[in-house]
Every structure is written in C-alpha cells, then in structure tokens.
Length: 300
Length: 307
Image (cartoon, rainbow over all chains, first blue to last red):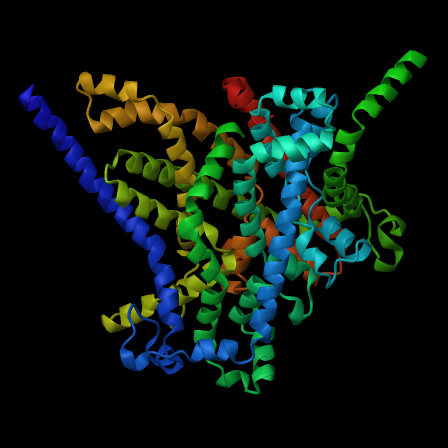
C-alpha cells in the first residue's frame, strides 16, 4: 500500500511538471503580444526605426508622441469611437430583442408551424448565394453605401444565436406559459414579462457575444463605407496599418506631412486605443463568456 | 374543404401574435439570405449594370467554363481545403490537450490566470492580430530586434513562402485554442467523479485515467465540433486571410483562398457573372460537404447529428 502511494505520486508529479510547464508557456505566448503592443506604443519613433521594437523600453526611449499625435486632432479617433459605440449599442439591443423573440416563438410547444419555420431559418446556414448577389443586393437595391445602418443590419440576426435562444427557452417549464395564458396574458406579454426575466443568463451571454462581434467588425465597413468620416474603430485601424487613407487624413487634420508622422508608433497606439476597452473589461466579463459558451455547446 | 379552411383561419387567428413576432426574423433571412440565393441566376448571366439582374442576358454555363479554364480555382480550392484540415487537426489536438491538462492541474489560482490569458486572443479582431504580427515579425519587429542583438541575421517571416503555412497554423492556434479549451473543459466537468475514484482504487495512474476515462468521455463533444468544422471545410476564414496575408503577392501564391479571391474579383473585375459563378461553386461545395458529414454521422452515431 505504502509503495503504491509513492508510485502514484510519481506519475502525478511528472504530469504536474509537464502540465504546468506547457500551460505556462502557452499562456505566456498568449499574453506577451499584448504587453509588447503597449511597450511598442510608448517607444520613440526614432528608436523603432533604428533599433526596432523590444521587450522593455529604456527611459530615454520612452515617448508618448504616438498618443499625442493620435489625440492631436481627435476627430478621427473620437469619430470612429462614436460610430463603433453607437453601432454596438443599437445593434446589440435590437439583435437581442429579435433573437430572443424568435427563439421564444420557436420554443413554444403549441406553435403549430415551429418545425417549418425552424427549417426555414436553419437552411440559410447550410446554403447561401455567395458574396456577389449579396453585395449587389445591398448596394444597388437596399442603398447600403455610406449609410450607418449598413454597419448595424447585417450583424443583427444570426441563426446560430436563435438556435441557442430556442434551446435555452425550451428548458423553461412550459407550465409557466400555460399558467400565464389562463390568467389571460397575450403571447407577447408572456414573452416580455414571463419568459425574458427567466432568460437572464441567456440574454447576458448573447449580449456579450453580439456586442463583441459589433465592436470587432470591420468587414461591413470595408464593404459599404467609402468615406473616412464614417469608418468605425477597427476599419480606421486597418487603414492606418496599411498606411493609406487614414494616415493621410490625420496628416491633413494635424497639418503635417505623412512622412513626419510617428507612423509606426501610431499603429500600435491606435491598436491600444481600439482594443483597450475589451482588454480592460475582459477580466470582469470572462466568466460570463465561459458560461455562455457552455450554454450553447451543451445544448446546441 | 370549408371546414379545413375554417380551421386554418382559426389557427392563424389563434397564433396571430406569435406569427407577428416572427416577422422581423423572417424579413432578415429573406433579405440577407433568400433574396441573395435567388441572385444565383447571376452566375448564368452576362451581367450588365444598366440592365440589372433580371434584364441581363442568359449565357448558360459560359461563366463556369471561363472560371475553370482561366482562373486558378483548383489551386484555391486546394489551399482552402488544406488550410482548414490543418486548422481542424492541430486545433483539435491543442484544444483537447490543454483542456485535459488544465483539468488535471490542482492549483486553482494558476488555472484561473492561465485560462484567462489563453482565452484573451479570441476577443480581438483580425485587424489587431495583424498589428500584433507586424509588431513581432515585421521589419522593426521584436523578433528581429532580438536576433540582431544576439548577432544573428534578420529573418523576415513574410518573405518565406515555404514556412508561411506554419505561421498561419500557429496564429490560428494562438487565437482559437482558448475558446475550444473552454468547451472541452465544460465537457470534462460533466464526467462523473466516481469513474476516476474507481480507477484510482484499481491503481490506475494519471495517464491511464486520461486514456481510458477522459478521452472516451470527450468523444461526443469532439464529434460535434468536428462535424461543425468539416461542414465549413470549403469556407475559409476571410477575416484571417484578408488581414494577415493581405495583398502580399509573395504569400498569395500559397495562401490565397476562395473567399479572398472572390472578394478581390468583386472589386477588380467587371465580370460579375464569373465572380458569382465562383461564389456559387463554393456555396455548392459547402452545402455538399455539410450534408455529407451529417449523413455519415447519422449512420455511425445518430445522436450527434446536426439536423
């Protein structure tokens, strides 16, 4: 018995050493790039050009020039922030409303066409017409070009989210609906006053995922927005990265030549500015994301 | 007949509110999914802007002939498929591997921080990933700074076409592993502790417990994740490839996928018909793979089908 215990300890120690080592390496690899971006954004442009980015900044290389430049003419960044925040808030609220409402109807046992409609929605995840018809429809017939709603509407409805909502609401006892019906409540009233309050975990996680998708969106902006003053954060960042239009705009607004801008540092400073809110909120929201993932994974 | 119509009317009246509540969702799928599906006709037409979709003349299969003869659709299809297979296999190994390891570690605080760090890359956009890569692998990047200070020659990741696919897989693993790990950890948490205790009584070591209890219990989750991934085998991650490969001509040779190619065609060629044909070709491939994958799962493990 005694020897057995020692033996058992050995394999656990071996596993523990390997396990902690592997996880530490990978976790550090995940977090260090974020640290490097912050370090890089505070490095003087001349140092970046001559010596490159590094792990630590010497005091003499420290500079806030990139941030000063970014906020010297705050129109670009504040405008992009404004658009991203507006689109995220409005899009998320509407999306959660429509998604949960659709999920509720499809989860109602007494709705006679629930299977038909479920398939009608689900089929769109299996087959689509491709980018060209979609793009032509949006730009030529729906007037999406340079309209703010072109950043909101495409991401508003996701069939996968409806499936998650539906399976969550199926877990709510149907007696709740029946009892409310006997009390004379209408179908919308039941959704709004009975089901929604019970679906708070669902609402919380859907909100996080939908809001994250809106915050990180650049694709719709790229497809539909041609003028710089309607670009969101991510697309502005993308343009600064490719140092074309956005840098020119900043140069014009600050009255400098493109060559004079601390463009390398500015790229990183913009990345910090665009990602900052997510990374700062992340420690508080992480557990809800984890819950939400398992909510969808187990039942979906 | 009358009676039937009467009951239908009754049914409609009874479910009036519920039907109304579906209207927004119906509008969305019709507008963004079903109407574009009807736009598939473009692939069989010679689209002229002035004539619109309906007025443009039919050309039969000319667009497809042109697409397969003149363009590099085959190599694009191969790239898309091979990249996705690499992502699925390595992703699976990393996600399951780290979930198993994390579940066996006992230090709660360490686990919490490690998981938090690993999940973080999932939350940033591919645009930000592209900046991070420039910061590390670019001309002025940290990698080259370190190499230079160690007296070694500079290494430019972006100009080595042969190692580029490895970089893509690594970036993919960096961004997605944390996400997948969460799903598998949840599945592991659902495994009964009695099994492990019984195995411990029988003298099983950690490796044996993983081999004979944890991994077999994860099979259903792995199957579902595989099925989902396989269904999208011909759909590349546009955001990833567009942001990271961009318009780097050197890398595009090995890292152009159907999605990025179709997007570039849309912007650069006036030949809308051929671009639509390329899109339809990809959509049909995707449809066939997902239906096939689902059919196979239905044969061998009917509980885990998608539909």
